[in-house]
Image (cartoon, rainbow, N blue to C red; front, side):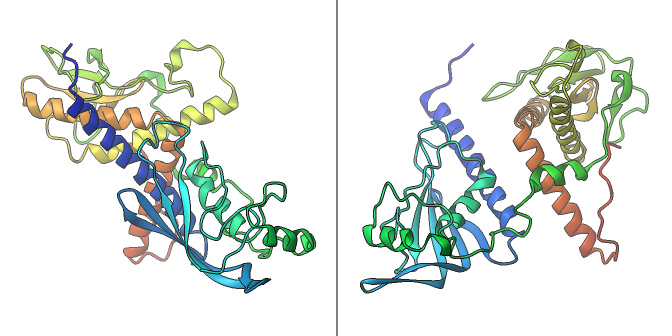
Length: 348
């Protein structure tokens, strides 16, 4: 096997970093959609995001005194070069506005907030809780004046009693993902083919293929074959058939992963030219070596395999389900339907 060059590894690293930053922005924008206009997130540069918090009751400095007042915040969320590859590389929030913000653990610009390993779904809420003085520590003071002011008024904090999200008491990503699709994997491991493939394909030979980091190797095929790119998930990434018992939690996890992969197959099936999407104890492609152009097939195997591998992560899978649910809702509303419930996504 040829070792990738330093330039190739750096290109892969940049790609992973861009994808992680895009996933972070997606999670923040999901929170923005549930904040009733009080929070927004947008790209600022390749190394930062700009977060806006509107109408926050917070602690402000007035010369040598302090008071609780309403302010709009602009926060830059800096992304260090080694993020997300190193756990110690945490996102760094920097407050651009207002200029009079005060907090026991802040100099008015940087808050002493440890974001190591914090999930994207929690970042906006953690920042907002610091801005509204719901979270602070009086034993590690940065601003002594703000610390003494808050210590004397503990019954008045948080300064803003309103949570950032209207549904902050629930887990929206998990609950909404569970409502997104009623899809189930085909019974008895039967092959279910999409995008116009033959109705009966259960007699096809099966080949397992794991795509690499930089590309995919096209297997040598002599006839119409199902190329499986990932096994059906069971929470731990293991084939379902290999386990005798599963907990309810692992079953829910595997169900989300399989539904997300099935939804992706449905979408990808309309774009592929050298193969057709299918399911046989896991997602994959039905390939006819007599008609498939080899280079195009290699590229499509790599594209689909890489996406399916990413969707093997439960967090990413649930986020993907929420995303397609939101898109279906938007498309449904744009079509002029009065019924606000999108159609249930199923494998065709």
